[in-house]
Length: 540
Image 1 (cartoon, rainbow, N blue to C red):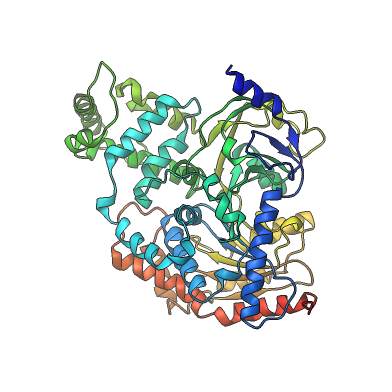
Image 2 (image 1 turned 30 degrees about the vertical axis):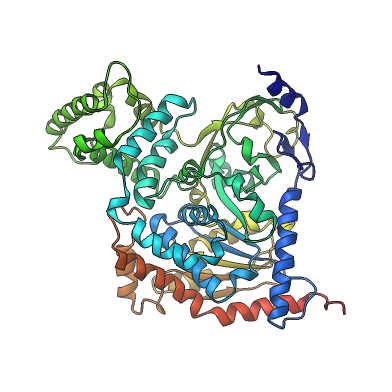
């Protein structure tokens, strides 16, 4: 081992969140949030307090407002862009402390947070989005190169790597090379809302299904990544590195946003739909693309046995023969296992991950850690690998990450871009809170069920304790009109959008999402004013 790495290992220890002043590979086993997040939030609150004073709102303490974006694939990514743009336009984004997302909303968030001063350039980001989502922005050679390189270099290769370079890249037309830790400075200075990206531990999904337990959830912030319950984190810069007993064994390169947004958005539907879609996409990608164009645009280094063009031409011939053999079979019955023997060595890890249905494989930073005894994650130390997935498999909105008392959230602006029931996220959250004694507003579930097919654009839920929740369904009777139009919008903007939206389609979806903010901005500001006045009066 490199002596410098040995020194790092000796310096590594489990520490409280406050002991994170350097960027060493420390693991944090402690409830609460890191001191760096506290610093970020404090600086953000000072900025918000200044904005409230400019609005002639007298208060000594700014209320903590969290904006939540749900999942929903490309539909959610576009709609989230529209919501943030309009929140910024009407001045509410300046009053927001936290911005948290699941799945498709994290695609939008990550695309914005890599920009400097992104809050000042949201209009430009919208125009760029309209252009980027057109067909010419997708490069199959880049996708092929990425998959093969990931398969060669990563001992934790999984479907998430395939998802990164196929579906996520294909839909967003974007591969972000920046990393989450690069967002730290702007977060710490309070320039932007503090971001929280949601995932879940797939091995603990049964715990969620049975007990609605927070331990299933895994969060990413610019400073740490880990389990909010019981409070077990690793520095974001060291997520994916290999640890043993709390000591760094092998430092891995920090995961970039391209990989993380595939991890956060790795299950846009149920397993059967996702599996079928991946199979169809890869079949189409490998057997129907212009192979000459693909092979010439790929810039990867080939092995001695194959050059790019001969490799792809050979693969094309074998896929074509298989296509003829199976042309009479339905798409659902087609099995990639039958293609296994026909692929070259470089594609074997791809098919292996498909057959085993392995997602989000990464080194477990808690492996052999002794600090988990008598804690909710007791037993996690025996696992060498973690398998992280889309949090939408639990709740398609990151409520559990902003509800803990340590974040002191007073107002939640929940923008729901889900497919299907527009109230499913808030109903599941209410069940979760009820199971664990967490203050949350009571819901009239029967009424919400009646309105699900034609919801309003705004709902407010309040209780004696806990946060006020404002809920905004994407397609509603205010911005869409009739129930028929709502249904048509849902069909137009599917979660699995494998075609290309026109610029007009993107513009329409942006405007629909903006309308939900524009039409309710006074109601939001009214509640922010009320919460601000509940704080002790400002000292003269």
